[in-house]
Length: 222
Image (cartoon, rainbow, N blue to C red; front, side):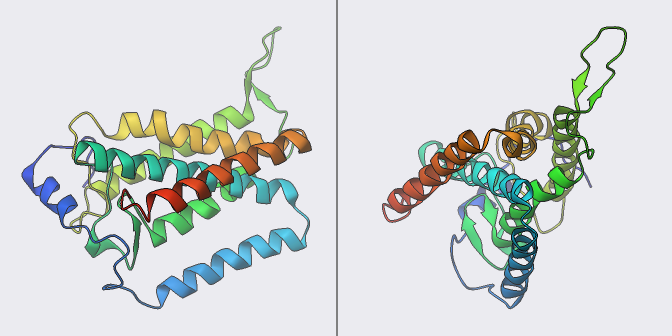
């Protein structure tokens, strides 16, 4: 049921080769419902003026898009991306490694992670006898990254190939360290930056996402 590494099989390669990016063949109304849920969550937080919560969600979501763009470029350059989603597992594939449902989940993941932190975000674990301890934000990021990596392992083992790993060296460990840890570091640390630095970070992050999408999609790269 759980798959921990790619197997490099021809089956995995064939599945990736068959992916239809931005095809509406499997489109259905769950697309609209999920979008409505995301809008409700964000506008509820905006209405409550929970700026830090909104920043947590937007920060992680921006990192998610940068990773997905990079993954799609890797697929174009080297033949296969690090991760892919199958046609059978989704209503709409945005880029070769991310479907609508997955992307919308990541739009909320930063909010969830941030809300799971202790009320006092300066809390440090194991801080005694003169030791500074470990920031609760770092611990929270590692815990969420581990949870998401294990769940991705489950998805890679589903019968409809919700996640496809082609390369034998890519799997739970590298996705945990290189992907999910940075995701949740963004959601847990960016909200507590000084307002000017936080605003600068988000503007640069999302400007880069927009620029890459505007250039690479029309060019047929991703």
